[in-house]
Amino acid sequence: MNTKNTLSVCLFPAAGYGTRFLPATKAMPKEMLPILTKPLIQYGVEEAMEAGMNTMAIVTGRGKRAIEDHFDISYELEQQIKGTSKEKMLYGVRHIIDQCTFSYTRQIEMKGLGHAILTGETLIGEQPFAVVLADDLCVNESEGVLTQMVKLYQQYHCSIVAIEAIDPSKTHQYGVIAGEMIEEGIYRVTTMVEKPSPSDAPSNLAIIGRYILTPDIFDILRETSPGKGGEIQITDALMEQAKQGKVIAYQFKGKRYDCGSIDGYVQATMELYQQEKSQ
Ligand code: UTP
Image 1 (tube, rainbow, N blue to C red):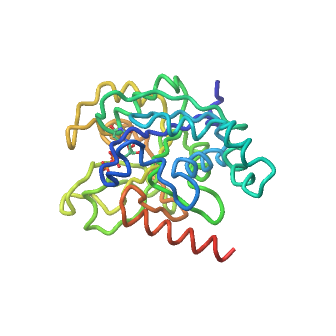
Image 2 (image 1 turned 120 degrees about the horizontal axis):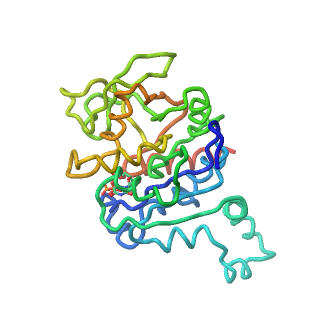
Image 3 (image 1 turned 45 degrees about the vertical axis):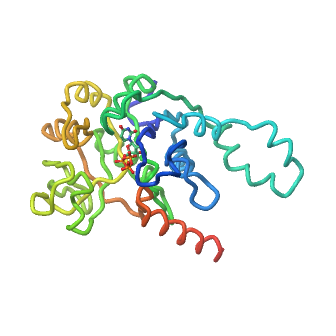
C-alpha cells in the first residue's frame, strides 16, 4: 500500500476503437502502432517507470493479446536472435518486463474514457494512480511529463490534469479547463467542459492524455451519467472534484504528439526519426 506521497500504479485505457486508423486498428489496438521501432504503449510505460511506477494496469478491448504478448517473454524469438546483433533490440522491453508487473482487465462495452477508467478500478483499488493515454506521445529533453506531475502531486495531494494551450479553433476536440493561476503554469480548476465549440470554450487550455487521479474518482464515476457523445466522460467526473477545489491543471514542459490522429502520428514519426538519425 502506498504512503500519501508515492504513486506506484499507472493505468492505460487502451480499449478505444481507434477508428481513425482503420484498417490498421481492425485487429489490434492503436496503442500498438509503432513510432519507429517501439509501440506507442511502450513509450507510455517507459514514462511511467521514469516517474517511479512499477505496476502497469491496462484496460483492453480487442487486440488484448497483442499488448499482453508485447510485455511478455518470447522464448522462441529470443532464442533465434540470441548472440546476434539484433539481440540488443529487445533489451529495452526486457528491462521493462523485469522491472514491472502488468495486469489487465477488459472493457466489455466502449462507453467512453470515464467508463474505461472505472473498469480499471479492480486493478487499482484505494490508491492514487496515474493515467496515460498512450496515443498522446510526450517527449522531453529532461523530465518526463508524469515525473513532473508526480512532483506536483506530492505538493498538492489532489487530482492533476496535464494541459496545453491549443489553437482556439480546436477546442471541440478536447476537454477544456478554466481556473485561477496559483503558480506559473499551474491552475486550480474551476470549470471543465468536454469538447466545447470555440464560442463556448472557457479558455484554450486543453487537457491532454496524462492524469493523476485520487481514488474517490471511482465513486464519482459510478454516479456520472453519459455526457457528450453518449459516453461517460472523465471530464464530468473531474468537474465534481473541481467543485471542491481538488483539481490542479498543469501546463507541462515538453512536446506532445497527438498520435491518435494521422497528422500527429506522421509528425511524431518524422521528428523522432530525425532525432535518432542526428544522434
Ligand atoms: P479516443 O477519444 O481517442 O477514441 O480515446 P478512440 O476510440 O481510441 O479513437 P478514434 O477516435 O475512434 O480514432 C481516448 C483514449 O481512451 C481510450 C482509448 O483507447 C484512448 O486511449 N478509450 C476510449 C477506452 O479505453 N475506452 C473507451 O470506451 C473509449
